[in-house]
Image (cartoon, rainbow, N blue to C red):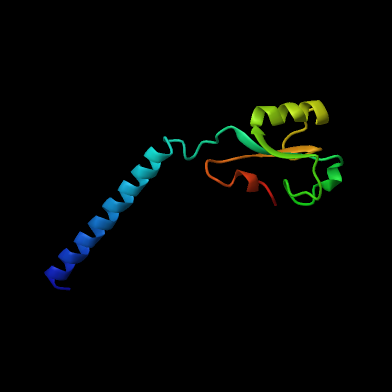
Length: 109
């Protein structure tokens, strides 16, 4: 391969690498450096009967309560209703949200 083509390809590779690094830095700054940490909010669901959960996590047929709450509040409901059996068992279940717009879909499978 001629030297000119190698120089052009190397230049393109440098531009792509620099753009990738700048995009990563931009996402880091826009999320406040917390894009991997959970915000402390959960998709929380309470049902009358445990059998109303129809999926592996939060998918359900009928709920008494289906809302986003601070995770600590949902845990408190679990303690009160289910004696604290956890996020994946009982009448009270939750899935912690990640940063982003889709918290209402978290765990709905």
